Image (cartoon, rainbow, N blue to C red; front, top):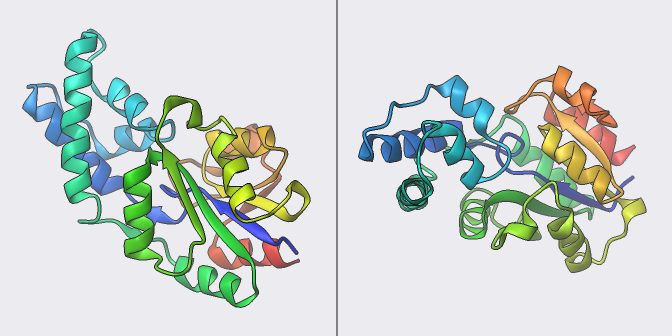
Length: 215
């Protein structure tokens, strides 16, 4: 049994896709850029909002316009990040079971730190022990820096910690930190991608995640 679980946020605990899409397209409209589809936004997510907006804007967008578009996205998203967002099926019971079992939990995300803290407080009050987002570029996954910080905050070690995420970025982050990774198939990537990046375990639902943590 693991004593600490570190979760990714988008695509793992929370379905944030529609709110991200709406904020991206709001910013694109402000600059008269073509809007992006839901499937396009899904494929762009995973490396933080800077990469999300770089992938969403036209290829010939200059850096100054890119930065303005990013700021427009950020302002809109911080006001609307919980409009359509919700936990995936089984997540709240999973977190409650972990709490009852005395297992520490953390979130490490490539979202802005303020957004991570706000969403965890809104959706998982008292169920997440530490929540870390990106405050500076060096913290962005697959850098393991915030994973190490979370482990330090929770007085955990590599042998007793497991990482749970939905993408190749999460698998790489876990392995760079020396952790096993549980990949989940309900998020923004698929089983084939998780397998291609040598994910240690793959779970199709929250009950399977709980079993892998407790066994």
